Length: 397
Image (cartoon, rainbow, N blue to C red; front, side, top):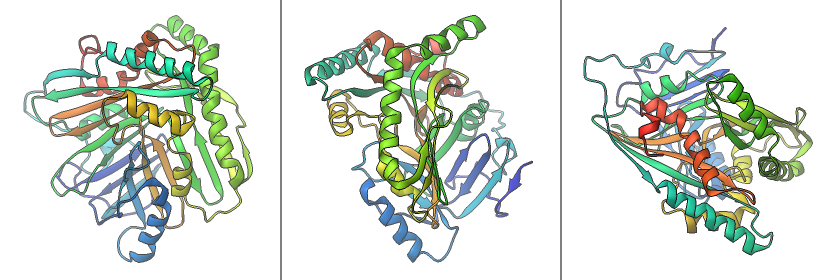
C-alpha cells in the first residue's frame, strides 16, 4: 500500500510554478516550487556546497533536488523545493494532486519537424574516428561513449504531465522531470525514463546498478529471446560491461567494509531495450559520507563516458559537435543526513515550450561498428519518441 511520508500536498503541477518528480517502481517523489537554489560550482565541490547549504538554511524541506550535467566542470542545478510529497509503493502519476494527463478540447499537438543532430552517417563517422583513436592509443583509450540527438519542434508547447504519464507506463524504469534553472514562469525541463541507478546511499548502505551492453527488444517473442541471447553471449558487450563494473567497484572499495555484486551480471529488461546490468551493494565505513560525495567520485562512469575517464572525456569533446548539457549527467535528491538517490540521466530530452531535444548514446569498444552503434542509438530513442508521439519510421533516426 502506498504511504505518504510528508502531508504537504503540492498545488497543481499544471501551474507555471516549477516542479520536480522522480518516480521509481517503489517510490514517487514529487515537489513544487523553488525555495532556494544551491550556489554554483564544479562537481568536485558539490559535497562541500550541499553541506554548507544545509548548515545555513533553517526554513523549508530538508532536501535538495535537481540535476547534474555530464561535464564535471559545469555546475549542477539543485534547489530546495517549497513543498514535498513522497509516496512509498506503487503509485499512479494521475493520482498526484493536479498531475493527471491534460484534458483539453484543443487539437492534438502536432510534430512539425524532427531533425537529427548529428545526422546518422555523421555519427557513424564519429564512431569510426573513435575506433581509430583507440587503435592508435595502443590500449591507452579502451572505451568511449558517443551520443547523438534529435531536435523536435511542435505546433504548441509540450505538456510535461502528458510526457511523464506516457513514460511511466513502463514500470521497469525511473521517470523524472526537473527544471534546469531558476524559474518562476516555466522554462527548460529535463524529462526522461532512465533504467540506471548511479548511486543510492542511506545510512551506511550504498548501492549502484550500472548498465552497459544493450540490444533492441522485439514484439515477437522468438525474436526478442534471440536478441537477449545474442546480447548475453556477446564478447564485445561483456567486455564493455565489465569495464563499468570494475571501475565502480574499484572506486567504492576503499570506502566500504563490504562491497559485492551478489547476483552477478544479469539481463535487465525495459519495454524497449535489453541491457546487461550488475547490482552492486556495500556497507560503508563512514555513514556520514554524503551521497553527493559518491556522485562526485563515480560520475561520469564508463557507462556514459569511457575508459579511462579523462582521455574518453577529451575525445568526446573532440568528436561530438554539441554540448551534452544535462544529458548523461545525473538526476536525484540529497538531504542533510547525507542520504540520497541519484540516477543516470539517459533516455531523456530537454524540453522548453514547443521545442525538445532528445538524446541517445552508445559505448564504443574494439569490435564495435558504425552501423551497429547507429542501430543501438536508434533503438534507445524509442521510449522518448513514443512518449512524444513521433512515428519512429518517419523520424529520420
